[in-house]
Image (cartoon, rainbow over all chains, first blue to last red; front, side, top):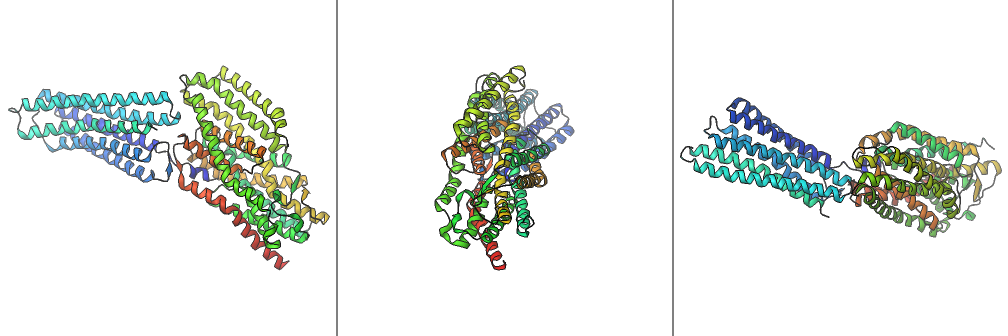
Length: 224
Length: 405
């Protein structure tokens, strides 16, 4: 009887994982853009930055479809509002990556000292780690549901969340260091260069901020 | 008179009803196994078709009550013609309602449909007093009791299965130890059910002792031995699922067999009644059912499975990805247990309703990832309208037949 196809609605977790996958791609592409940027290959950087923009669009589309399908008519093992809030945060990670890409695109031939450059690259690498951990966390959430909320799987999920928090902490530290560095170098930098660097730093640390927010939501999902 | 035109008409409609039963219920028996990917839709159709026919032909009741479950008073219908028209009207009313429900994909009880059909013509002929209202209250109670009992049982079973198998420190080890226990327990229920539903035995203790316990012990030993030799060494959840996947094929097969043995009466009961009148000229409350009528009923059900069930199960197999084997097992096991206990207590319980309740129960235990609440509402509404709608269609047809005849 067809009722079985209707009674069981599509699980929201698979598209959530798909969305997370696109977000990871966006952040990875951003990292490539940053690498090209630090090497002075602005042509390649531009290509990657545009690609980040495209991936963010895809993430947006998935987000909209998911929002339309997670309606109040579903009975789910986790709160609907938590899923929607989580999705919002996960999407913000891609948004932040796109913001960084935009800042990369606004200025040609910026004057960025070597040490600042290295720090930004390092922040980029950590951001990817954060995005990948979020991807892991939502996949683990699926397993948590699969196992019938087993303590062991919940513990593993908590570990991932703690890791995300660690990464965020680390990026926060890098961010502060970078800001200090910009002002230490204020004589060598134009106000435009300073604004440019600080905004890249801010949007980059935004990536891990949102990753942490997403992780927080997963933590709430598991609480009964 | 075997070639009585009314008998032929009743046989045709009876076949149609059997087809509708097959089409409507076929996927019910196999859906959890197909949905969980244990078998393909094509395999499911063949298994279900064969087992439904086997159940209907070899184990169908050879004596059936014309007035199903004493829902109307047979002493008030003495005219054989009324019984013939009534049987035709009841069958048509039930069949048409089943078709409507199937079209909208709603799982309704075939037994309740035929009850509705009988009540419909009974009221038109002899007024409201012909209906045994206390029996009717039991039917109405079953709409409420079955899903609630199914939901509570499935909630508990699923929690217990996850606690023992999925959530322990060493899932592989505990899956090896606990799965045979759960499988054995399920087979105690299945064995007993086989005695009561398929062989139409009466005594529950006898069923448990003679069929339930031996089946349970055998299943325990076989699954325990098999798991010691080879356990699917993937991740613990997939491993546990793989164990229950195989069990599910057997439980689904049993459901198909029992369904054939029981529900064939809904289609052939009225046919047998008309046959008795046509050949012997009298109407009784209980009529013998010739084997060939059972065969026809079984054929009709198998045809329903093969023609419509295939399409339906194909969609089921492709679309239900969220139903895993342990969940499917919890649903099957709970529904079977509830139906067994209820029939022992003499409570009227519908398998269809219990299964839907069980699905919701597993969902509430945070097991199933998403259930469509709107559909649940539609299904519950359909249960409440089954008897009235089948009754109204049957009443209209009966009235028309009385005017013409």
